[in-house]
Length: 327
Image (cartoon, rainbow, N blue to C red):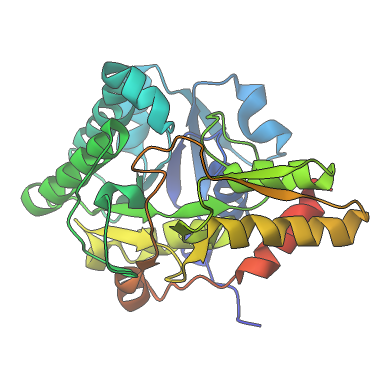
């Protein structure tokens, strides 16, 4: 078993996490807290809802994400910012592109602008992006540094943020990084978007013995990366931000897996745990968007070379941990 990363670097550092009541934050914030970071958590939810009741010791500040002035002050006072907040549904972005622009571009730009003007020394701003920003790629695994080629409003806006990060790194000397997240899975708080967290929802259904339906042929390829590994990628990106500034880095395993094989593995393990048979069916006639029909696996070269990161959790082990948590 590989050794866990050492994040004592963050001890005593002032860290702002946006989207603090969300899925990735549910694993990132406890790890920062355990490392001894001085936390400021920004979310649109009430203070007592942040992280679903996670118990903090020491000083933790809370900021309303909608309060522009307070958010700017919190950004100015922090050493590191992990920007996880945003609108995450591809379908919602198509239906309301202006709303998605505000949630995913304007908020990111506001944070980058505030952070670039801060007067503190060492630090970085690490932003959650998406691997789907590269669009439809024929060759797998897709190489790190691949140019954005968005085919949805959501991905277009995420790619715009990538360009802003590049600009602020080059022209404002701002240590800003974007992480292009592949298919993140694992136990934790459920995503608020119906088209996110599909594998987690599948795991919960399988534990109940419900039929799992794979839409399309089931042969489309995804790159599943475990939540704990994603958190490590964020934290290491902050530590090594000088080498990564301006870059958009894949957070992926480099290993592709068909949807049918992924869902079948979830069903198999759930059946072993519960003794309840789980049927996996294929709905080949289901209407799918071009993005749904994509194939993706990404080679995370930038994080491997500049931050020493590599996904540690093999897919079967990650599914087992997810099912055990949900059981």
